[in-house]
Length: 91
Image (cartoon, rainbow, N blue to C red; front, side):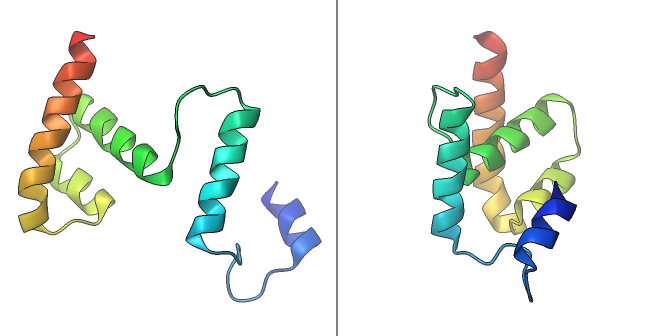
C-alpha cells in the first residue's frame, strides 16, 4: 500500500503532508468504516499500547521511552497504566 500511495501522491519532505488534526479525522473515518463502535484517537491507541505492553511484562523504561515521557512524567503515568492494566485483567 505504501508503494501505491507514494506513486499516486509523490510526497515531498513528508510521507503524509497533513496536520495532526486531519490525521485524527482520517483515523475516525477508518474506525467508522471498520465498524469500531468505540471512540478512537491516537492518544487512546498510545495508551492502549502502553497498557498491553505492561500486561506482557515489557520493561517500564521501554514503555516510557516508547511513550516519549521523561522519568518525572513517567512516575504518575506508570501508576495510571498499572491501574488500567489491573482493571482490564479484572473485567
